[in-house]
Length: 325
Image (cartoon, rainbow, N blue to C red; front, side, top):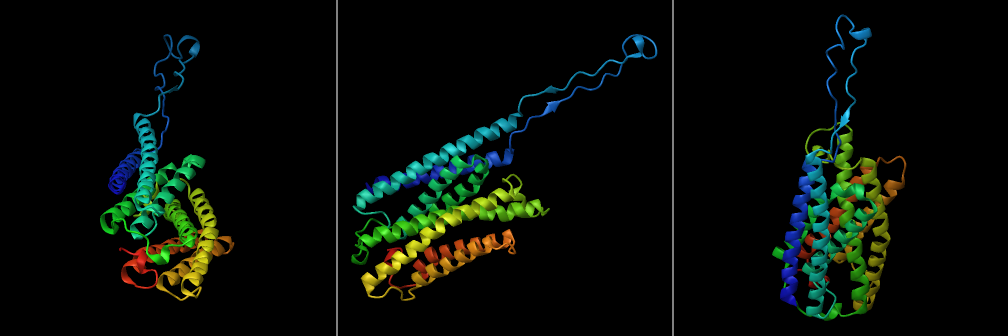
């Protein structure tokens, strides 16, 4: 089961890469458009003499619509392939987590490698739900699959550790309650960062900025829709994240005799909570510009990355068993 899980992760990475390349092809070719070919006006008059017969000129032929441009058809096909590959990669991703859990005889959240795999799966699963609800956001898939390739490959190549039993401190029902909610919220925040960055680029492009990276947003959906999607995802994830932090404090009280001790992991979780609360407050304040509020959301995701990678790698504390070993 362990070897099968490892192979499934590799296949998932390759499939995410195929999805990313397909999205890039769609992005490069652009959206489907219909062109109309119009015949040139008649140059000759009907009949002989000035004005022709009765002095009536021949009417030009009516416009003849052509079929959808070939590149537009190829763009649509590439987009469909990208969505199908993303869905297949998500299935492989889930199968890797399930087989990892079966091999370990526990939930697959016991170390940093497993945590990253689970967070990224939640992110891509949530993206497929968003895509089902809002097909117009499909071009965001290029950036989402890029994030999947980078994070899942990093987990497999850098963070991988063999399966080991849970340490005694994690052998509690609070492990399922606290970690499941923190993983779920983190996955939604991960997805929410994609339209947030997309909005900042697209908003700049709509304001006339034509330098890098704003030109990357030329074919993205409108800035208004991206901003609304960003808010919806963060508003959904924040209460879950709040519950996860509270559940962690309750678990800490039961395990260590105190609900809060400013452990590095606890401190950065609190920082993330404050930043995301600040984003939602700024988003609800009419005087705060939407791009300013969105920058706060991006900052929130950076604090989550710091908590996941920076704290686990560079700091030690009561949560160190969740690191690379």
